[in-house]
View 1: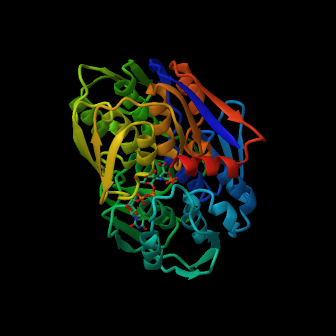
View 2: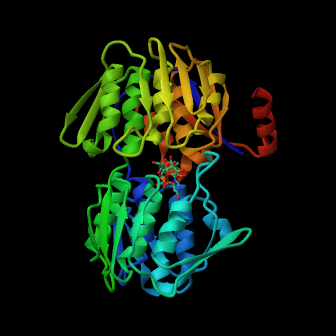
View 3: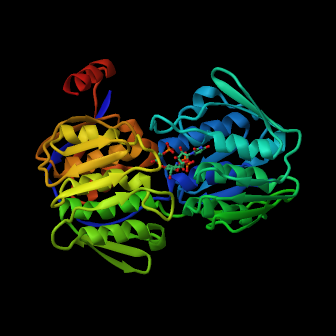
Length: 434
Ligand SMILES: CC(=O)N[C@H]1[C@@H](OP(=O)(O)OP(=O)(O)OC[C@H]2O[C@@H](n3ccc(=O)[nH]c3=O)[C@H](O)[C@@H]2O)O[C@H](CO)[C@@H](O)[C@@H]1O
Ligand SMILES: C=C(OP(=O)(O)O)C(=O)O
């Protein structure tokens, strides 16, 4: 059993460089399998999701090696097997990108149902609709499903909801499909654009990425290239929010400020000072923390993945804040844990009402997903006493060396492992406290 211990309170102060984007990396690593030549990727974070994806790579015959500089070299020239073990695909969300990446080459892909963070409902109907429009058929079994297409044809696909996952997956399938594909109501997330830029560098013909209409002209094959993944806007956002929480000044280096516009604008409204210098952003507490109203939305809206650190900040605001989660209306697992630490937050119908200002105390809490984990770390940093966080494997899915990063800014966090405390005992303890 592993857990994290945080001794608080402390102030986070200083500067840091964030790793490459998890969400871009997962898309781009799968996209690299489309190439007919080796590919080198820079800035791929060393997260748990990458390690599972690399295992899947091995299974299908695609070698992914990290060199001593951290670059990942991918050799897709010997891919020989489109059958992915269901257990592996279920360990993270985006194993389904292998459908887009392998279907054109093999005419068939078999994989398990998607894992990743559990927000009660994460349908894949828009992926299915897009692939079917391009000529694929799905057969669903208990633990796995098979997607088949004798040939993929370009199609015009209108997404009924804005989804980054289905936008990326359809783009992957379309680059080697016959004819033109038009994606309408496409996601505009920076990670979607990053994937399209990478594909274009390999010779794909994609226009409009970053807008809601993406056009893809199918090509016969893609070449190798070297590409650097964008910095992680979601990790950057969490640390910029942290300055409001702990009162320290934080500089995030080498980030793309336009990726964070909604977050930075909202932080200024709340009373967090923001200074942007080229690719560096500094945030600091600029007076009192104001309560606010916020709605999460797909890019360029306020990201659902920053809702959790923002919630910690709003527990310290003067007054009552209202936070509506429109992307995943059930994504509030962190709230119940924050309440155990002394926060006063009520959730009903996808809306959290956050009463400020609460003094937080250390407690035993459980991270049930990647962003909930970072939120609890931030709460633990300002809480009086000891905070113990279980479920740290969720944090490790998305954050490379989170503890080192926090401690370099002044936190007092340690990782623990004990054979004496079994998972069952800890879970029983967590349930008792709940
Ligand atoms: C690995 C990765 O990139 N994960 C991100 C990605 O997840 P993911 O790609 O799974 O999320 P989507 O952008 O697809 O989901 C956006 C919305 O569309 C809905 N939807 C999605 C697909 C579908 O077929 N049908 C459907 O209804 C979802 O339930 C959600 O309400 O975007 C989410 C929303 O920004 C982020 O929280 C995740 O960090
Ligand atoms: C929801 C997330 O991840 P995933 O889609 O990989 O589960 C996340 O990164 O916040």
